[in-house]
Length: 189
Image (tube, rainbow, N blue to C red; front, side, top):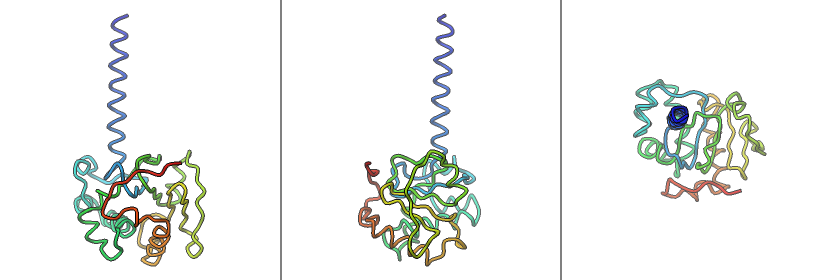
C-alpha cells in the first residue's frame, strides 16, 4: 500500500511538472502583458527564447513571417505610434506576449486573437465583440478587453487598419493606461 501511494505521488509530481513546462511553452513575453497576441503556432527556438525574449532573436531564429508578426504587434502596442521600432526592439516582450494556447491569459490586460481559424480554437470563449463601423473585419469587446482581427499579416492588416485599431484602443484608454509602465492588472468583471 505504501508503494502505490508513493507511485501515485510520483505520477502527480510528473504531471505537475509537465503542466508547468507546457504552460511555459505557451507564452513568450510578459506573463502580465498589456497586450497578449494569441497565435495557433509556435516559433522555432521557443525554449531558447523564453528566458530572455527578444524580437530581434525571434526573427533571427525564424522567418520573415515572424518579423511581420512582431512588427504589427509593436505598431499596435507601442505607447507612441511613431516610436514602434524602438518599442519593438527594446520593450516589446516586457509589455506584450505571444500566447499559443487557446485560453486567455488571466493576467493579461488586453487580448488580441488573430485570425478566424485561430478564434475557433477558443471553444469556451464567450464575447460580445462588435465590428468597428469603418473596419468590419476588426472586432472589439471593450468589456472583456478583447480584439479580434484577421491573422497578423501586412496584407490583412494594412497601416490604415493598424491606425484604426490604435484609434479604437485609444478611445478605450489602452494607451493612457500604459504610459511608461508596461505592466498592469487585468480587468475585473
